[in-house]
Image 1 (cartoon, rainbow, N blue to C red):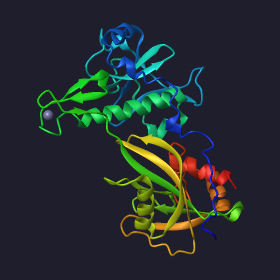
Image 2 (cartoon, rainbow, N blue to C red):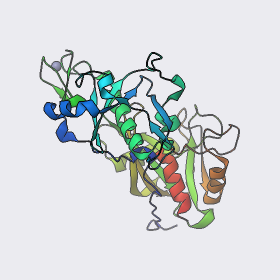
Image 3 (cartoon, protein in one colour):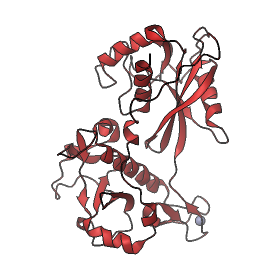
Amino acid sequence: MSESCCQHFRLLDPPRLSRATYDRADSLRMDARRLAAGWPKARVVVVDERGRTPVRPAVGGAVGGEYEVLTRPAPELAPTPPDEATLLGEHDGVAYWAVRGWPSLVDGDDPAQWQDLRARGADLDATSAGLVTTAVAVLAWHDTAGYCANCGAATQRRHAGWMRRCPSCGREEYPRTDPAVICLVHDGGSGGSARVLLARQPVWPPGRYSVLAGFVEAGESLEVCVTREIKEEVGIRVWDIQYVASQAWPFPRSLMIGFSALADPAQPLRPARGEIADALWVTRDELRRAQVDGDWAAADGQQLLLPPSVSIARGMLDAWTAAG
Ligand SMILES: [Zn+2]
């Protein structure tokens, strides 16, 4: 195989949590008058501390999904925008906000309707997916940003929940995101015999495999991170690193940045002890059979179970499989 060999692919569709269709409306965040004016017809996305929000089968008009988020009328929460609410943005002239909450039997909530993004994110309509992903991410940040990292004083919310400021030393903090790379490593081949590298973590049940991923370290570029992670995790060298797509993964605050890279399957695989339980090259034909068998929600015990469709890993594997 020549190092100039390449076979690039694109996702068939945007990652399921990247289908944001609403306007984040950042110009509204510091406009208290307009925020108050929009409150009477605003809607609120309520998310509990485990990242669950009420969803229901979509009732017409929803695009790209079978479920939709069940929002509440904002005036039920408070007569004016409360301090603990974060503005998500606008859609069809309606402002959407996020707050922490939990199922309330007094309000007629059905706790069974409360589901998280891992379980239901792939099935949400595009607007719901964007709203809930942002709500989960920004609320998780507030949970951990209550005290100034510089002087320890309690911080205060600003900008409709998009900044926290320390009244003691003036430090400002904005919602944090941890970049992580996720890379589909393949051999550049074509047809059903082309191969892709999969691995599994020790904590995963037998049969579950995915592509390799890891967090970007301080001072590191994305490309160097891809090279380092794959070398560390399975001991092989990759080249022709290409950006594919990205997706927020707010568990609690990652951004998954997807790449593809080429490698020579003749290199010996050396799974990192304690991190990688097994790594193997799988052909495109084998991957196609695994797609039919189902994902991680399928019964354990099958030889090769693929990541769920809500993950960018699955989007990349599906795209690679379709590309040859
Ligand atoms: Zn401070």
